[in-house]
Amino acid sequence: MGIKLFLLYLIVVIINFSQLEDRVVSKNTESIKIEKIKKQEKIAAEQNVKIRLEIKKMVKGTYKEIDLLHLSDVQPIPGEKLVPRVVYSMDNVSLRGLNVPNKKQKFFEIMVPTAMIVVEEIEETREGLKLIMEGKKERDEEYLSKMYAKYRVKEKDIEVLYHKLKPVPISILLSQAILESGWGTSRFFEKANNIFGVWSVDPTEPRIKAGEARVNKQVYLRSYPTLKESMADYMKLLARHKAYSRFREKLQVTDDYKVLVPKLDKYSEMEEVYISRLLATIEHNKLYQYDRYEFE
Image 1 (tube, rainbow, N blue to C red):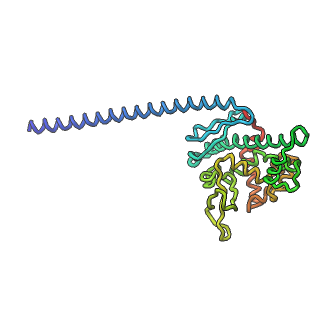
Image 2: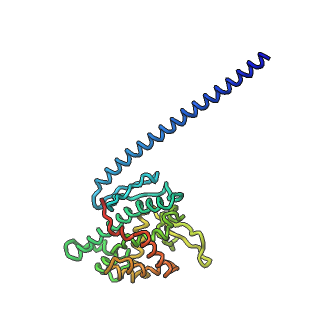
Image 3: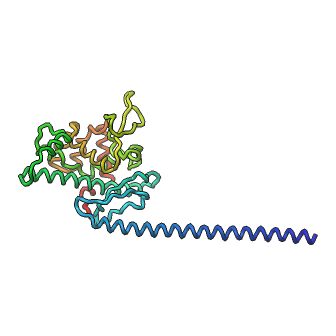
């Protein structure tokens, strides 16, 4: 009996020691993981500081391209309504799974700077056209011919081209981006950088299939290499398509979204319902504030 009790005691001691050793190993492993995370966070913070300094040096006509690996890499928009000169790629990240407040915040932080860069580039083109009209810059007929074709200016009139190129207000762009992309979570947004649900009728261009056919006909949507190119194409669509001629007429005399949005009824098959949703989206999210934002 004495030997049996001793052996039983010895087994218990060994088991307890083994469990204690496991706990020590587990604790050490956990500590290593925590240290690794802290190190990664420190590196990320240092990298963000470096990026911020690079962005601060950007001047008009320049911007930093950031291929997002983590949503934490998105640069914040300061409370003073100053926007960093940055354009994002979202090929490696998604807004899905975020709660509503975080999703909205990241959506605006990603979309607003990119939209403002697109607007700035269009305004720079318009400024060049204005200088030509004023006789302060030499006419380049080859360049103008390409621009007339691109924007469907049948009159080949530089003034008509100039007016067509007036950019869409950021508030309207954002409202359409929200509705068309589901706050950046639609399949078209994630797989094709297609922010505005723009269709494709050209089989030779990059595109993806829509989920459902329309009247027994397969529908395709354009695929863009970047979000920036999607925005630029959206601006071009509204600048040249005959369905938006009334919108362009109003855009020459006002930037008031309440006047302009009703002229976009042809953008969606829902027409008046779509207009109501656009207006409600602008007002509920106070999107008109972004029309007054400036670059840092």
